[in-house]
Image (cartoon, rainbow, N blue to C red):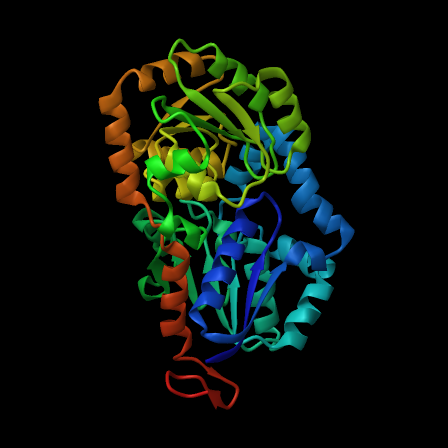
Length: 383
């Protein structure tokens, strides 16, 4: 048994924290550590850094997504920007670095590249002696995910692993586990039971509209396009933490076939009940859809990582894409072609990893047990 495992994330978008929470649950369930600590590193950095990684990110998503995409593409070059980035990050993350040195975890698992970078820096400065693992929370491996040292990388799919190999990571240091999602997805109800639990009409298709964890993006425009469809179906809008959006949509549209809901711990039930998801192609949302056999209609993905995620889903046949202008047409077309929905569902199921968080934990236990921490061996069978 390990003494302490730290799971590190960053609340720059909701997906990294969601993955960290899934790993925390799986780690506690496994019993491989006496203590599991889950930390958002942005709570342990300067206000300047916190603002840049969280608030500024959301502003760019809403106001200048193409600028965000340009930055993503320009910086996707190994080592080119590492020096300047490290200087800024270390200077603004001293409390997080002190915490790592004081807590002395046996294992650090990071679901955001900033967290990986800080753990690697502490290791290079000999302030930390831990097994370092990085979980890539997109289908595409951006150069920022590379840190030195990192003992092991966990990826969504084989193509992600091949990208890492191209960037210089050894094959033995990569495992394909899927992006960690809640263990609840492994025990999700059947579609019929899910609809009963949610009190939905069992005779009409169910379409989910996702606004993401923070409820940002062109959600109102998406809903208006959905309402113009000729097909008959039920609509559920997942507004995340945006209570203002939820209230606005329910005030304007609420009916027997339209509901806007806020943050929920039952995402696996909503996805099990649905026939199609409309939204962006964030790594976590996409992984949850795949685990639920749920096809996606991707609209307005954020340039950069979400566009690259979308390309993977489209290539494998688990999604179709459209714009706000074509959404009504695309949705009517998909819903009126049951054979297409079935094929997309089967493609999603082929990629889905409902036990992804447990997969990471099981592999992590095998790998980290071979490392010695100081003079104390933590090989299997020794405490």
